[in-house]
Each structure stands twice: as C-alpha cells, then as structure tokens.
Image (cartoon, helix red, strand yellow):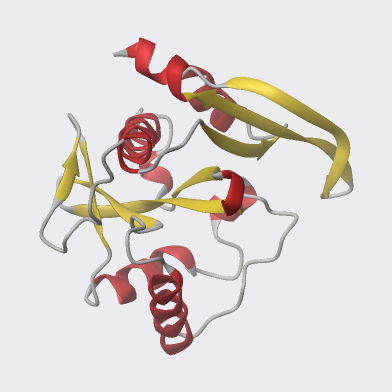
Length: 195
C-alpha cells in the first residue's frame, strides 16, 4: 500500500460543502475562541462532557497545538484538521492511536458552532476524513467512540457504515445519570464497498 505524504499547508480535502485543511498559526486564535467560548460551551455538553475541558490560555493552547504536531512521526498524516464551510472555521476532525503497534486508530469530530449542527456538515467532514485515513495509512479498521446520550454521533457513524462493536453499559456519569460508552467501527473492506 502506497503511503501518502502529510497534507501541505496549502492543500485541502474538499467535499461538496465542507473543506478539511491543515491548522495554521493564524487559525489558533479562531479555534481557541470557538473551543473555549464561555465557561460551559454548548458543544462540550455532547463531546465527552464527563471529562472536563482542559483549561488553556491562548498561549498554552498554541503550545499544545505545536506539541501535537511534534509528536507526529515523519510519515504520519496530521492528526487534526480544520473543518471549514464557505471559508468559515466550524470545527475539527481528529484521530488518535488507541494502540499504534496494531494500527488501532480512533477518529473524532468537533463541530464547535451549534449553527452547523444537524445540517450534515459533520457527516460529510467525517466521511472525507475516514476516507483520507484509509488512503493514507495501512489501517484494517477505523473506530469511533461516543456515549449513549450523543445519538447524533451514533447516527453519523451509522451513515458512514460503522457498526456498533461494543457497548459498555452505565460506565459514564453525566449530570447524575448513567450512560453507556459506545464503540463503533468500520473495516477497510466495508469502507471500500461503499464507493
């Protein structure tokens, strides 16, 4: 399998309505404002709210982003890209290694601007991202972990052909209620059949 090079700062992954691109220095203040907008940003109520949002100043967030880039291997694709709609930053797509030696990779997505929820932007962005990762890395599977209250995220996974591979019952507590942790995934051969 041919490995693709990391996206250059002027390269984009384009869909019909969304564009994924590399995070540049000028994007740091924009992302910081979107992510840390107020004491309890609305997006965080859906994105693993049982984990506190890591506190950052603009400068510590800038350092955090630089450290993320520095952790990447030389032939590894960027682990986080911006999602844009009509030139406006609305969120990010990410991946992380659950277990790198066995190529166990999980993806994530954050749409920080609620005006862009429920419009299909997240589904399109994640579809572009998963496709890019399958084309870039020798993965057998791409996974997605969410929680049972985030039904929108589960629907996105289903739209992309992901199957529920595991449900850990009542292992997340949020606002005094128990929720399940949901593990979803799609195999390379399943993904390629979609095309």
